[in-house]
Image (cartoon, rainbow, N blue to C red):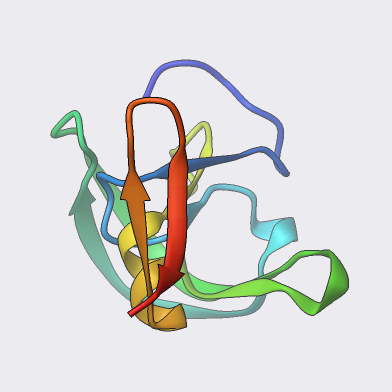
Length: 101
């Protein structure tokens, strides 16, 4: 992924299978994991070294977020989000629709 983003900027990505954050200070309940690699949509391999949670406003948040310090942006996985929330996301040419299964 090209470019550098701030620690709270997130890109919603339908090509990655896991949420990925690069800034340790944003994650809580961060637990070390056995290093695992993941492939980004551009086929770049990244190494995750931890897993934690992210809190947003109004009690919203993400679970099972991989900590990947070499990333330069945070990615929210549409696949993981829709699986965890039991919903679907439909992308159209001009907008995205969402709903429950």
